[in-house]
Image (cartoon, rainbow, N blue to C red; front, side, top):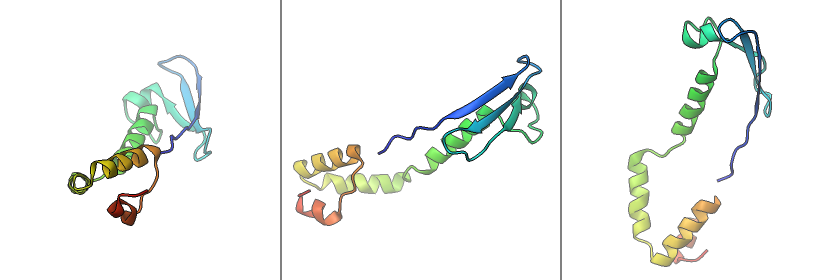
Length: 110
């Protein structure tokens, strides 16, 4: 699986308790100047975001990409039916991020 690399720029002015900051998506440009402050991080958001909210959103996106446990179990059962050599090929292909056609697996050849 390709590794994602993203960068953000953060500007903070003032003290920790009374300062204000802004977050910008430097790599994608998807958002710019999202305001945040200490009071809105620990109190009412008042229409501002926080680094914690952005991290929570990223975690939710990652969690949504996982397979449901029932499907994961089914895939494991199917993989167990393959020969040792075929399972090893699947492991290598999975780590490399390569898609493997069912017909190739059925023949045990990649």
